[in-house]
Length: 445
Image 1 (tube, helix red, strand yellow):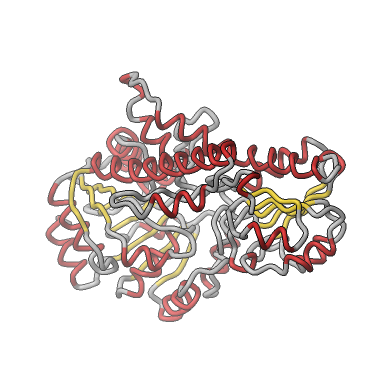
Image 2: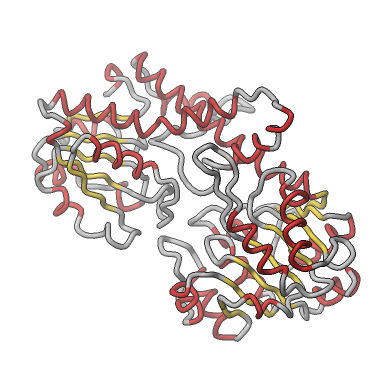
């Protein structure tokens, strides 16, 4: 099958698709292509997840508009089913790879899942098939790892016996389907002709710009955009720390800074989590490792953002001291365990870092998160007898807490606002000893 043949099969919706990895990216993208008229096979190694999907039940909790309904629709129509058997990918004309690509503790890429997927898929890869990596990878990975793994197991040569491309996802939990439709994508192909066919595929689900380029550029674009966000958040966090020290209010400062043209200061907060931002800057930096480029900004930004949960711990200690309470004997209620508001995504959760530090101090911690099974329940009931409440995530149910009622069940009136949700006057009126990230004590009111 030639690229021209594949383009015709895409246009007629005769092309069979396979998606490897049915998580926050793979599941919605599989559903969207199925709704567009393609026959889609999803592959994952988690049997419980496969069972749920084939029953039309979304394994992704939290507020994810439209996903549950879409999954039920495409499973019911027969356009999408899930399996753990790679042999069922042997008829696929197009294979999308959406597995996790984390970094290790030394900030080096961990491609064990990617390599396994490439090797397993390579053994059954159809001649003339198009393989597209949607996972975020370090620049150069498609050439140096993906194609090598596929060719070693399939015996096929890229651009001759199969085709290869990179089209990094651009999604965020809570907005998965919306972002897939409305955010632009970069289609990087091993050849310009491959990139063009990729664009013809994605135009069936994307309503924004689809730019064609080479694979390296596509890899650079994705890692650069998330490194940019990380650096900008780190700047906001550092300004927040300066405001605390100077007695200022970072939230008011940010509001007024952003009134100036070409300024867009990001939000400070209790930490940066998720699968992308904590790792993608390291993936970008990894591309320069062999050349020993002296990197300063990216590591510094990572250090600032990684430190924010520890800063929340410092604010908590300070407020408990004011309440004449030792942190080692305290009982703390942490509000929010997901990394992002209104989702159940706990990957690289800043709350997990805070809890680990409190556990090491001997502090009793209680977790509440309205979107995560095991951490749900009556908030006021969980707060009874606690010495402090730490708000770590801006979940919608936390935006309108009854602060007076909350304080009435606590043993100590301490509230730490790690996301700048509450006006200081409201916390003072409720009788709290409080600390808010980015607000100095002289500006507390």
